Image (tube, rainbow, N blue to C red):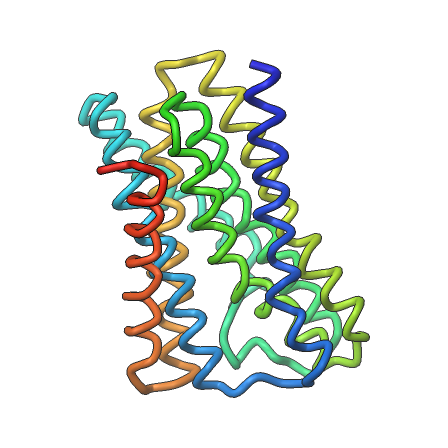
Length: 251
């Protein structure tokens, strides 16, 4: 199991660090057009939806009972909801309305996204724990692409509050590294209690669907009322499908 855990942690850390890549443009510019940002938010939501419905849930359904699948799905959504209720001051997490004038609010945004990266890490760790070739790398690749706009969401308010470009990139990268926590939990729990794997896969799916539906897509439309969020979401789902073909996964 140690070898599996090391591979999952290293891959998850790499995907999390990609969040810093999303902030790199802010080394050269101080802002991003709202339409571009809304499309990126839609893309991020599409990747989350694709991961949940095309990767995590099919494997949960194949290996688990209906109560395990439905219970996990509900538990994942409930976990995120309770986290929002417990930390209401961290809302909203994305979108133009998050750019408050205070640095404290920008730092709270970093904390919020860092916390919400844990379900993504859980999904990647469980992907490796399935033991099915290609599943873990596929999820890692999908999350890495999704982390680009998420890194921008971290860095942009920091830059608007006077944080240096380099520091904003570092904050973005570090926020993504919290995914490693979820990956460790996923691998350890699934390997020691194999029966938990279908439940855990559905839980990760439920958490991703909730974040997508509650935050990313609505706030993408709040940022721009045009069609870019919808096209971005479609592109995100297409990416997950394409990665499935690349890694030889048919589901």
